Length: 155
Ligand code: SME
Picture 1 (tube, protein in one colour):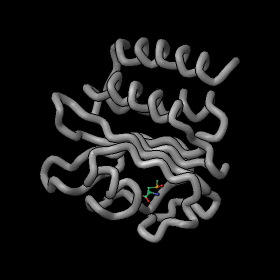
Picture 2 (cartoon, protein in one colour):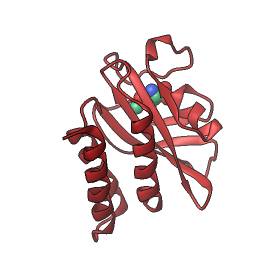
Picture 3 (tube, rainbow, N blue to C red):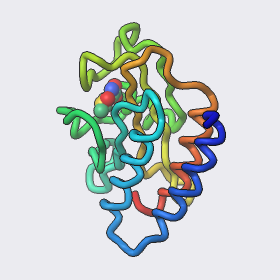
């Protein structure tokens, strides 16, 4: 299946997942699994939420992939923290060239972080790590933004 066709199919499946009667954490975990199992290069897939009590700090939500020590990330730190600060998608083709980077695993080569908004307010992020260099394109960024919109009520 061509990548764009795969993205369109997965968006339909994610819409269906968000409609099932289950708890938010489970649904987000299913979405992580769906993305990581079906898309080549999506080796770590997870959600971070903006911590409501401490604001300017992200807290790890459902994810699939290797466990990470980066359970809490202050705004401005690493790729996730900078994406939270700027409220813009952050695409890094080669993580070894980043100074302000929080390594989750030495295997990771590229990363994309997409902010998620609810009613115009930043509520979280979708973070994908890849063991392949330059694994993500603008098409991935557009696709993941749509995923973020579909799941924003679960964040
Ligand atoms: N690499 C991220 C940290 C999160 S882990 O990849 C899961 C960063 O630099 O913010």
